[in-house]
Length: 493
Picture: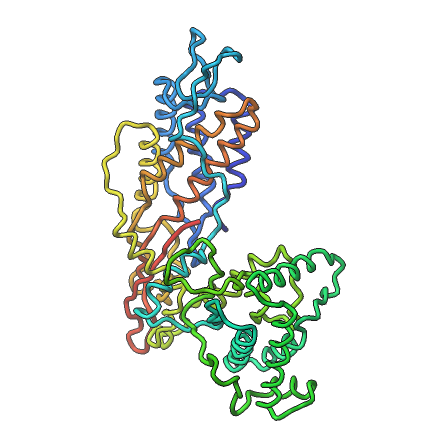
């Protein structure tokens, strides 16, 4: 299971609200809740955390929280005084004892806007994956995509658009090994333009998707009804010709039973679609002279004309589009493909993109290692101690099994770890600083407590995602019985 941040937030928030805590006890409480929350953290491969001692965390957090109050610097004013004993405003709190003060101090922008957005668990960030593919797909000879670019650059006539999309669909069918999916592709094409509601009652959600698809096409300068109708008719015509079958029902059966001996594409149009990049939607803010992407290529358009396993193209809710667009475009790349046998390793099955992506993350981290000295700033010292906790787990921050790909066993090297990167002290200190100042703008203690607890959980979760280890294991082979191998663990969550 991932780290339990929901309980962390609830427990820290309740502690702050239940009693005006002393700085020392608050620091110790946050350290204790952090230690409890990460006890069930794990890597993307399923190894769970081996909990270390929290004595250093408790001591350092207690001491540094006391320093924050004593020095009256960057205080959390909902927990401690907003004004000093003479009624003067503490710098950077943005508060005053006189509500009519015409010149209240402003919050320090350095500590403004803490990150409150929940950190999504790995393995794949689609945007980072696309960047990785763009840079390394050729170098690493990565496996090919199951989804293909439309290759629409803008300026095509309405017939050129429909022919290119039709060829892309025909290419998709010829690339599909599953007979049942080939049948569904034919059914899906036959459904173009029908705008059925999938048998569900919430028609407004489907109508919104229909409107967005039509707008994407019409805003690009085309008739949506013309494009959709022509893609449908021209694709079915070529399928009937390729399978030598005029009856639609029989055509579906033949598609299920096998591929045509020769697919009859529309000539003079692209018939070989790229399999090395996901199709990105049109970026209207890209003013580069070399940028050539058709404005109709918005995510709604891409979803509508990309087969995703449905047998009806209109079975979409508007609220689904963002996630389905990402899932569809990433395809099998977003799945963790791991080797199961020694032959898999020899045959480079571990070169599936998610594995190579995580491997490259680990390699890149070596260039980002933060070896800077820690100053006397209390937030930096909190960050340093949090990182030290993970360093103190030495060779076993995570359990030895399951092995990290391409390793298939913890033997012969024992399933131990080498710490490659323990995260950025600077980033973590900044996250803690902002989190502990998160409630400054609130007069409501429960609200401020929730803001502090939530922002702390985000800062800690983002730090876990930076941890990177090399796993020492092996692969079983006949006679030996194991050959040493290393794996890569790119994060904890």
